[in-house]
Image 1: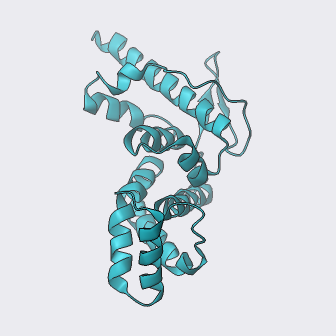
Image 2: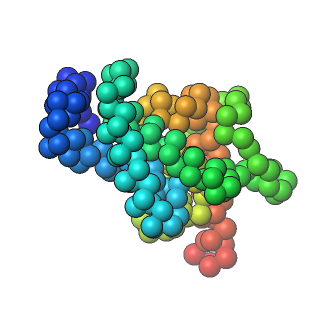
Length: 198
């Protein structure tokens, strides 16, 4: 559920005045987004639960510094994304590996600016026609960042601007990563079909 800014302001004001029920409302309104990001970036269930608690604790403690420059949900999404990045960094787990055209793998830095591709309709049928469980399984085999971007764009239906605010990535880079994610997803599915003669 997306809250407009006036509702965000009212909720934040109530929380800062000591109303714990108002924060529970914030949690209910944003937990879907938080869970989607954490579940795509983190594999271990216990770690997921710990990180979800950490995210909402951080949001509660930092609420007084929220400037309403974005939606409250976007701000909490940013906290979630950064908390996951910090966790993966501590565990030395890469969030993105890219398979080059020649089939070799190369590591790509998250903050590296890559020229964006034009917004294409790369294999959009994958999200319309294929069975849900096959798609879900294929998405789960993508690198954590690709999983997250696909989820935010296609499942949460966030705009490039909102995803950019959460991930701190330029729009061109987002489009590039989404293009690569869809391409890798398509290749994974086609490989599976060929292997299993589907």
